[in-house]
Length: 86
Image (tube, rainbow, N blue to C red; front, side, top):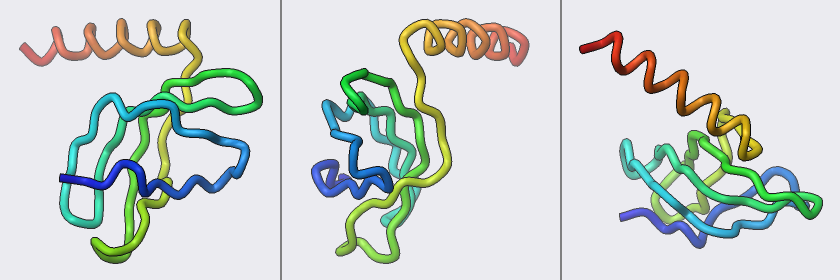
């Protein structure tokens, strides 16, 4: 299980609201879906997180910060892609 309270954001203006999903790839890599707040606005963040060892805090990797409408569009696109895989 990952330590979701030990997240290190590159932008100090970002505040963690909630960890919605956490897919641990290894003890040093994870993909997290979280709700964050930045400059008074909330976003859904889907990002890869990494750390040098399991004792270190998680660091942000590449990913996306979605507003609500952007998240809906992304979900629809992913649903279409998933249907194509079947």
